[in-house]
Amino acid sequence: MITTAEVALAASAIAVIGTLLGAWGQSRRDERRWKRDRELEAIRWTREDRQRWAVRRFAVYSDFLNATRSWIEAFDDYQDLVTADWRLYAMPECTEVANAADQALSGLELLSSPATRQAAEATRTAILKITAAATQIHHVTGDLDDRRRPPTENELNNLSQLIADATRHRDAYIQLVQVELGTNA
Image (cartoon, rainbow, N blue to C red; front, side, top):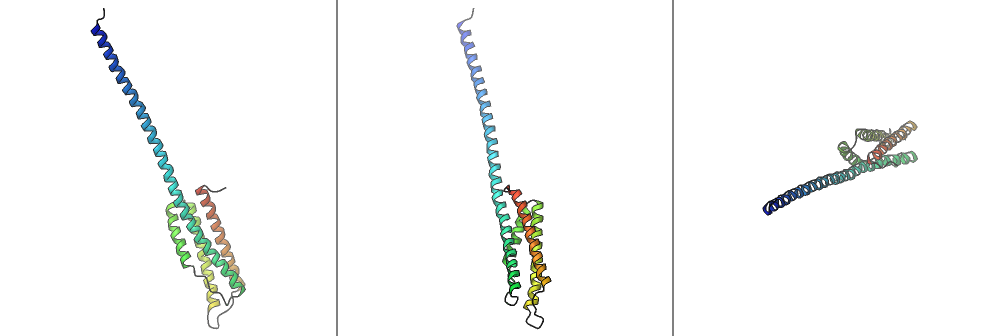
């Protein structure tokens, strides 16, 4: 026969075992919840980091795009003006635009893919060729002695071709940037 003391002892043992099992179960639930919260927090941090870098990349890509657009447009306007009346127009001063493009290109070295960097460098090189051709035209049209002459058709055609090449390189850069930013529609 079971005595009252044995029943009390069994009930106490069951209570202790129940408490231990309850604590163990709660501990496992808390651990799973903590792990899930940590995973969600890591995902949130990753998403926020991607967002911050996307904003930074967009700014650098845009800076280069704006600088090169201004540069190309300045020489395109110069070409139109010097073709109309070569005596009146001086070559555009693009030092600030060139510096802005160079700074943006430096940012691209850190933030863009190799293909995008190559497209940006090709755009800058093409624009430097425009600058050289425009400088040559400026020197022959701007001399103050008897060597002053209008630009030749070949010089103007060369400038026009270089502007078209720079625009083509810039368009290739834009396409690569759109792919990298996920904005290509």
